[in-house]
Length: 135
Image (cartoon, rainbow, N blue to C red; front, side, top):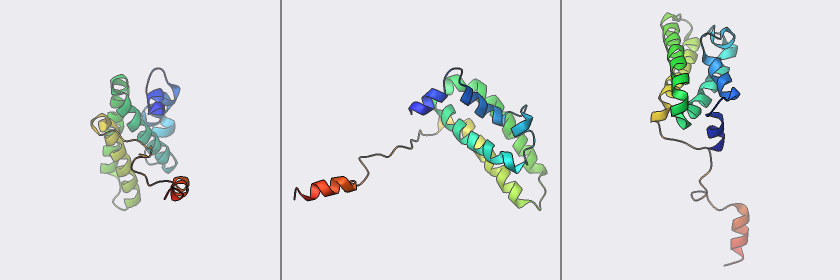
């Protein structure tokens, strides 16, 4: 949670760079939506933006949501004009559209953590060894 809170507040250059990756005015990453080399960068950025937007909606919604809405609209237009014979490209664009939609809607989704819930985990090897002598 600390990392999300750190990157989701204030004048943070990392968050600004992540937003820039999907900003349509940035020709380097978002100019050509079909450039395969940039799709993975945008997808990873969208996954991180999902978490940041979810963590600090109040501060980021006015910055992130308008840019993501434009990106979503561009993806929808590209999907409509995508050639029927390029199913792979269609699937990749659809995945990016789904990630964009998720990032926009992230404040309405349950918060998830990547930390292991120790109460639910089985005892580790060391604890098993230590407990073995107590029997």
